Amino acid sequence: MPILQSLLNLTLAAAITASARAATVQNIDKTFATNPPVADIYFYDNPVGYTWTVNGSITVGDGTTTPTIDSRLFVGLRVGPSDAGNGLLTLTSTVGGSTLLLDGWHSADPVLGRLGHTSGGNFVGTLNIDGGLAVIMGGRDMRYDGGANTINVVNGSLNYTNSLFGWQEGAGIALVNHFIGADGALIVPGIISDAAGFSAWAVSSGTGVELNDITVAASGGLTLNFENNGSFTTITAVPESSVALLGGLGLLVLLRRRR
Image 1 (cartoon, rainbow, N blue to C red):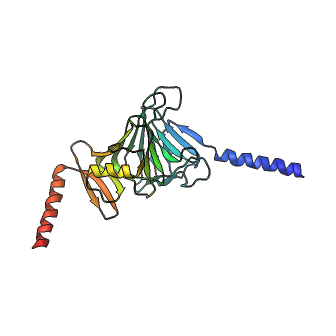
Image 2 (cartoon, rainbow, N blue to C red):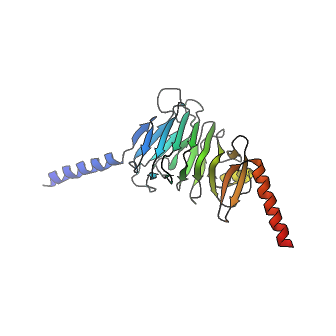
């Protein structure tokens, strides 16, 4: 009986270990209508580009340190022998009100994922947010490496207000440049009034981050607009005339109050 019990215990332990191992998902389009397995790790290292279609409230990862291997997202990371290490991934939705929470973990590298990589060359990652999707970063760092990585918030939002979220620089030459479109929004904790303030926030919220490593700018022909509620700032992109109009209205209100 002890021998049989020992064999049973070994089998059970092997099954638990196998269930915690990460499955590699690489360079494919995916549609999420339910939460994926927490142990899947996603690699996108092909410049052709792929798409995640998120329909519903989807979480990649479980926000905990168990299992020891949890979901992470890598874009622009060289995985195989190919030199095509630059990655492009579009996060979009066809269902209104859909959200994507990136909340993964790994015991050896406890980050949400990585943009770019330097092994074998300076590979970069590009993330596009479109289709009205709300993307939320969980309570860990996003590592950035390689060269000038890009996040385009075209139509939807990118939310960094989780108090534990930050950046982690993997190499001194690495950058992450955000570009906000006319229907996009970037939400950041604290009161920020300009792009320089955004860069300063990234430095204070990161590990090894240098000033202007993490930047924000408006897409072509637009101007950044900053609105805060005392706790966080929403950064959008509007025509320059709209910013002037908003400033003029604020001045008018101030003059009326003084009277």
